Length: 256
Image (cartoon, rainbow, N blue to C red; front, side, top):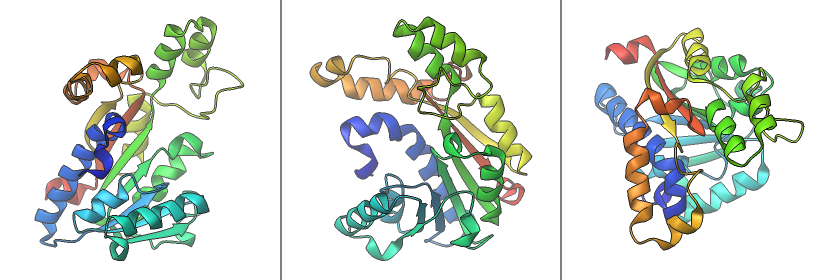
């Protein structure tokens, strides 16, 4: 678990990793197989793929960036899991040009929906890659977190713009094409035929706390991490989270 838990990175990944690890463990028990087949769409340099491979799973990472895939290969080798991690160049739109349909026990779709032209199609493709008993880990930018961040930075017009924009964008210079509410993400998951198993808010406080405080105050990072983990499940905090995580399950997996 050390790979996704590096001090600063832990604030971005810890909550998602714990939910994902628990979901993978449940799939292992339900299937009776120690090694699952995991697809990580947009998995980049392996923030989740390498830790999943360390658990013994076979992970295929699809990413459009050759540089990210090179970094993935290096990271997997350093972690001693190169034989369980495969990187292929591609994207969510043309997913089945590079991977098979219905071939995976778990699909990760992290930081992808923000950048695809049709988020609904992106989710449908991710779901189509699942076996009849499978789970989807979906992580996307939250609308409320962006509105709050712009307002606290004194950019009130941009905060209002993000709040009212159909895609949650605060202006022409916004680098994120789409942001989502919990209702929008769960509707996408359910519309693709999955049952929503859990919803978590990610980076509820981490992006609002001055970095110097976290870096210099003894014990502050650990305390902030524990606060993030505690707040993640509370619906009241989902509306201000920087990211939203939704765990979707096929009906067969939910019944298992």
